[in-house]
Length: 88
Image 1 (cartoon, rainbow, N blue to C red):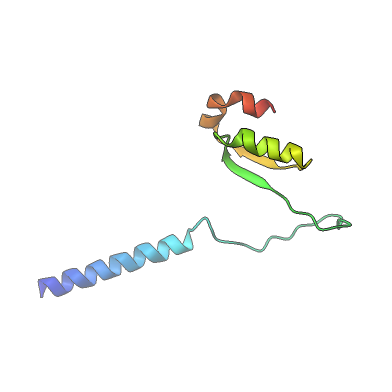
Image 2 (image 1 turned 180 degrees about the horizontal axis):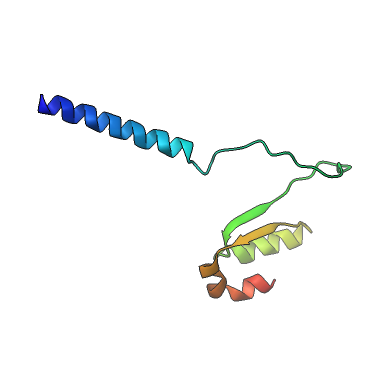
């Protein structure tokens, strides 16, 4: 009987963990209305999160090569490590 209760408890616990993970997942996509003037051609908005990192110089070079724009979201700890890249 103890084994059965233990097994049921483990299943319930795992089910709750998976359910909470799915509910709070950062990969959840939400419909967001973008307002403003409609561009004449298709536009893609590029963002880079949690940087800068060791590949930031490569990303910046590629963006410059194609005359592309992007938005970088930075982490405070990384800012002090990669200060030169932020200035670019």
